[in-house]
Length: 53
Image 1 (cartoon, rainbow, N blue to C red):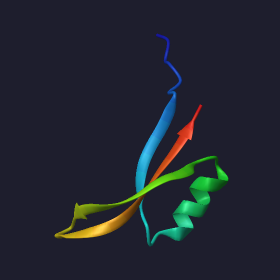
Image 2 (cartoon, rainbow, N blue to C red; image 1 turned 45 degrees about the horizontal axis):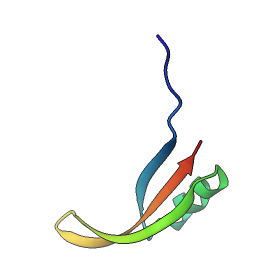
Image 3 (spheres, one colour; image 1 turned 45 degrees about the vertical axis):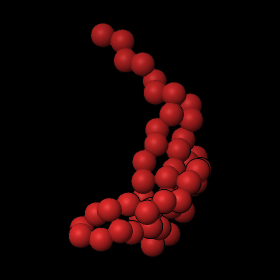
């Protein structure tokens, strides 16, 4: 079985979670967008991060 390496990985992280964002940036992720997302009964700011391979 041959597994393919993904071209990129995208995910959202809560905007208030600056510590996580800094960690992800240290391992090569970049911020590409800011947006609001409905979750836990409200709308909250999130950051879209991506890493390309």
